[in-house]
Length: 153
Image (cartoon, rainbow, N blue to C red):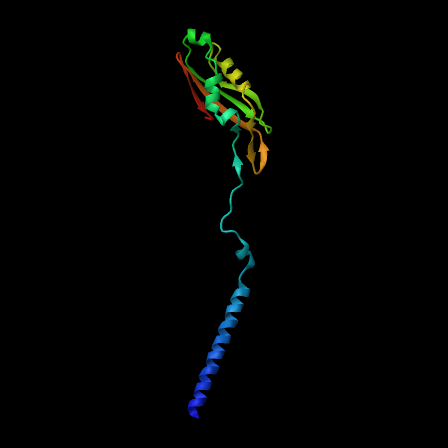
């Protein structure tokens, strides 16, 4: 009989330990902070997008090579240097406020302004999901034989 009581006692102890373990597990689950569960692992920054040339084939460099005229007077006088300009890409993609920041004589500034005036609409810049105005800077280097193009300096 002693052995039967010992076996029952062991079985009762196992049940008590099991119930106690379940109670602790449930309490831990209840005690977990809900804000920690709902908090994302990482937060993505707001998506910001620069304006993008939307001309044929989307190739801004090709547009410049096809449309920039090297002024005859600048060729004749062997004018060299850089024209640095800025312009605004508006919320609707149109170009405005063309400014020469650093210019050259002999028609080079005018050639760059005429080029920018011929630009088709752009895909406007976005910040936090809204279209914004964006100042774009452009540098074009003139030389006696050709010109070089650098975008958004």
